[in-house]
Amino acid sequence: MLAEIKGLNEECGVFAIWGHEKAAEMTYYGLHALQHRGQEGAGIVTTDGEKLNVHKGVGLINDVFSEGEVSRLQGHAAIGHVRYATQGGGGFENVQPLVFRSQTNSMALAHNGNLVNAHALKNQLEAQGSILQTTSDTEVIAHLVKRSGNVPMEEAISSALGMIKGAYAFSILTEDQLFIGLDPRGLRPLSIGRLGDAYVVASETCAFDLIGATYEREVKPGELIVIDDDGFRTKQFTSPMQRTLCSMEYVYFSRPDSDLNEKNVHASRKTMGKQLANESPIEADVVTGVPDSSISAAIGFSEATGIPYELGLIKNRYVGRTFIQPSQELREQGVKMKLSAVRGIVEGKRVVMVDDSIVRGTTSRRIVRLLKEAGATEVHVRIASPPIQNPCYYGIDTSTKGELIAANNSIEEMREIIGADTLSFLSTEGLEASIVEDRDRMQHGVCQACFTGNYPTEIYPDTVIPAYKD
Image (tube, rainbow, N blue to C red; front, side, top):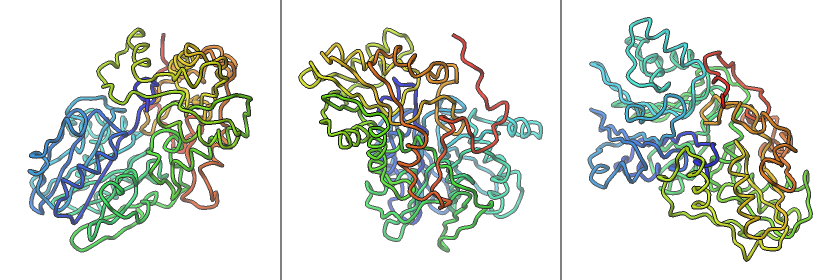
């Protein structure tokens, strides 16, 4: 993925396991499968039934953990998290799982998503005497849980969830219980599996495959799951609502070997490519995809049109992240380090370049230039999603509206900016048709707010990011 260059960054990844003698090791491997969802920090918390053990740090999984550190995390249950900073910014204090200790019990919390009313809740909590230790909106959940008083944990969590709004897929671990929850709209992905007698939970099903777990089902919107020595039980903490799973999970974020809404991501992306070809056909010699998330759609486009698919762009997988800097000059060099055009494939050819999305447009312009410098006679850009015209407030770091190229330019103006011969996007109807098979099922809806501006929840005034000023 080219998230660092494109200005579109992953959310976070959550993993949890209960009832396994090597809980920390399984969590470590599970987080490796979710590494694409966050590269800024990682952490694992385990319980041995008496106390919580924690290790976390800034960086990739291998930067944070060594063999000795994992083996020291004793216990039969664990939660883990990989982080990309959206709300709250970076820093060690914001690396999850967040751990909170008290005289009665302790809890660790890992969360994927954003709370749209976090600012208002922080003001309320501080006015009542709370002292917040991080700038992450995740901490709000813990404070609301503890303020419920001396009541059963399940009741305290349900009460807290009734006060928060937005997107949240979370796991809470105490000394003797594991809690799993999903927001009423199911904006973030979260699935349940089994590994022998152990229960496993992960943001993506690819984590199950890595550790040999078997997928069972997705966590339902508005569902709270409790797992402990007495077994597995579930309740709805709110009335069921139409699911609006983030459509960008299908377009960009999730690994192609994961399943969402019981449909494979790679298959969904191929269908997007085929639908895109039906909506925006073009005469060309070669189809190529921008590695990695666009390759599936490019294959689908090729199959639908009969235009051969070729590796016209190659990704250098051994480039570190240290080159990513805000200066224009280094960003330009960064694209050349990340991608290379294959001259022997594109020279003298009319090329269809399929990409998953356009955010600022700067990367698309540079890739078009790479292809033309390699001898492509024409470059026709096809985007396997609608134009991104609105910010996301649910856990994706899309830019402010002023930075989104599609929010401020027509398609023809965008075509001129990126230097393409033609430019077309997948329609919102085509995207939904590609990823939603049964519109009558409550579980199968998607959120397209970044394309349409129709947000599935209320957006609070202090959630909205001020317009970008050049």
